[in-house]
Image 1: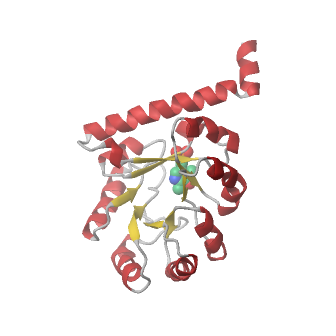
Image 2 (image 1 turned 180 degrees about the vertical axis):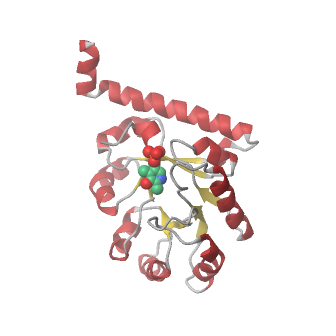
Image 3 (image 1 turned 90 degrees about the vertical axis):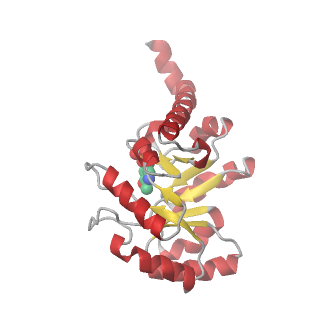
Length: 235
Ligand SMILES: *Cc1c(COP(=O)(O)O)cnc(C)c1O
């Protein structure tokens, strides 16, 4: 017991845990993909690192994990620039709400934005992308369970919004993102997101978290966003 406590203090067991968790996650993703008759290589694991300190990224980076998700621009700015300098191939995904006053900073740091959900943001993104000369991968967030407190576009507005983003704003929309309501069967929500994407010719689906990524893969997820199953509980 005492040895374990010392290891936990020095962070040894922690990094072993993260390496083992990552190996396990990769196996689970591969198994779920195979069961769904899909190519596991078409599924990107986004390691959701919010609230976890930079040093906990090291064991994952060492194992070739290069896609990471953060919820907040400010937290990512404090954590990622030194890591990105050391691992230039790493890719950062913004998976939390984007305020219009943070768009420029977000574009400077993130390779993908999963939370485009309103016209004002689309307009501003279009302007700032042009100024920056750098196009991130863009996902439109759909409030798939139509929850009043949750971010995202109502599903019924999706088709028109996608068309405007492409036409009027010239944005290169890659796919859709959702967070199904907690405590409900996620399957019908994943299925509905996949339907909206398919009828709009969008190939990418950002859906599935620690508790339901295998189900999401069955429904066509191309990007699963996994935090606690990799890094442990957030404090
Ligand atoms: C925190 C978060 C995740 C990861 O959640 P886990 O349950 O820890 O895997 C995924 N997506 C979004 C949008 C999040 O905010």
